[in-house]
Image 1 (tube, helix red, strand yellow):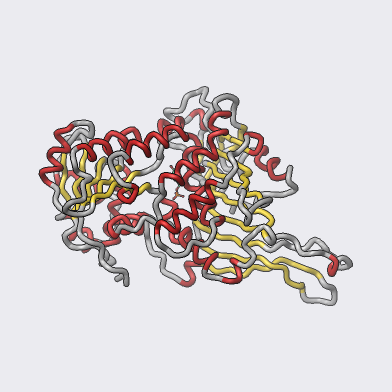
Image 2 (spheres, protein in one colour):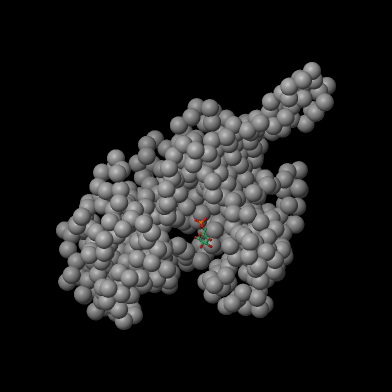
Length: 477
Ligand code: BG6
């Protein structure tokens, strides 16, 4: 049982309830919240989809990824109902209006093209009116496909709902170790004291995946690695690493600091970016066909499956410190990590030692898999000579805590119900992310990504991007 208070009762209306997200991530998270005593017994789920089905059909579908937690599932099951409806049809909203009372959360687990239309219909039908309880709108990603479309979607939703009613999901923010970045930084004098351009040389943010595009060809070929991962997930990690300390955990305080730092990112010039596309190979223990041979991917596709960027954050704290970001599919290992590389110390003292190449200090925030925090330092090798070797002060989460099985959506759903927007993206953060990558979206309408074999660390041009600055990527392991 959790020490946190129970969330208030509400009806959770899921648009697209028969889809993958609802069964794979949302339902298991709701069951975990129920198990931990965090939900009110009156909380119900109303699933909407266009297909022929009924309560039993929806329950069956939503159960597919619930493992263990039998008692919690049984308590949930009775509170799930199905509503068949067409998202574009006014009749659906009339039915909802007649049926819903009190608090409600509208979760748009649909294709992105429905976000605007559903938000609009909820608004015009009065369903977002908060007269007899809260009414909140949860919007999944991708939020827009470029700056202009993101601005248009924000404007459309904000003409029917207040910013305080809109919860834009970035599921990376539901990860425990992502939330820990704030504590690692601001809860420790030791780290925050050196967290600036006087001591930090450069920062690396990596989200490497072994999975290939697989069955997601249709979505992915229109999206690509840049849109799929950078302005949202990687920029959220960057914001947590780079933002100034907020005055409190109040959502607006935190979101304003993040928005400020994202706004300070210089729009990325194409010469500071590399795009890659995997060829056939083996990744994650599986044979992977070349990206262009993936089902639903155009044979002449120029979509990238890998991106590496050099990003400048023009604040007093970070001026002159490059942030190198990279992400890719079908890579050698699954590894999401942030590496803070500290500056070298003056070598005078060590100039006559056998290895004047001092191992640099690095702080590694390992986000997944194997959540951990590691500080790499130089120590003296025992013996008559002053020989420096690297040593690690390592903390593995699994050694100290039971992380259990979580989807990452537990915190996010709970926060929606209690009305805490800290872990959700505000309109200005979303637009700031798109603004920074817009020069690449424009430039990459032509040209081709560089090839890399599936199962590798990415294209050679990504290594060259760092070699140009006399640096190397941290190993992906
Ligand atoms: C999603 C992307 O938002 O994040 C996927 O659409 C990607 O392409 C996924 O695989 C990565 O998330 P996680 O939690 O598996 O690291």
